[in-house]
Image 1 (tube, rainbow, N blue to C red):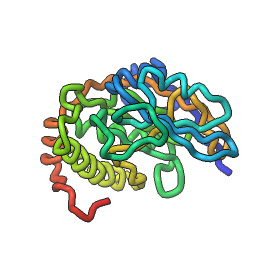
Image 2 (tube, one colour):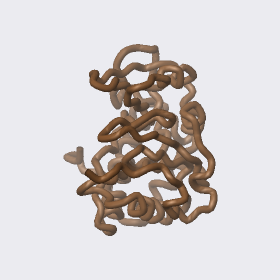
Image 3 (cartoon, helix red, strand yellow):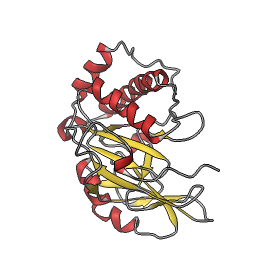
Image 4 (cartoon, one colour):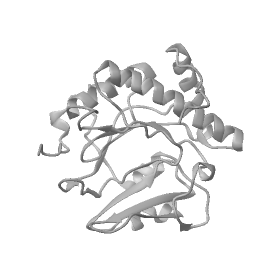
Length: 241
């Protein structure tokens, strides 16, 4: 079995001297993504079953302090109150960022360097690097934060717009990755969960999950729409998942 790729900023050229140089804690990541209300935290103990709960964002880091377990968080904030489960798309209150889950595995990216190249390609299209990279233990998860004022939903129309934008973003990501001979998992839904930095990925062999700062600034929804239009990504079809 091929060994899982390890977090090593020196081994991957991300075209930025600062990329990977500054670790980001889970609490810092939530602040960067505008989580100031409620956040979903998911946990699967080794040999146990998957569980989820919604907690106040300020308490999320304490729930993630569990050894011998895989942990994830809802990348977008959700409505309260604190409760069991992680919520649905209807519970999401803002689009915190654009994200991609680039796994190193058969049918996806062959190496971490290939994943980094796709991030470079997407950064060139968006006009900015990601704000954060999550080294998931088996790949890379770049996050491009969205400005707080632009991200918060004022009603169901905003939520529908965000869901459509993510479907269009998926098309662009799949096209860019395909040009590099890579595949991308279809994980572009509003209640998406990602690995929590500072925890361990126990899939195959235990590997630390680490988040590092990149140099990108926040995007606006209008700027993202303009990019998608410029690159000819049509509005999502109703039959799109």
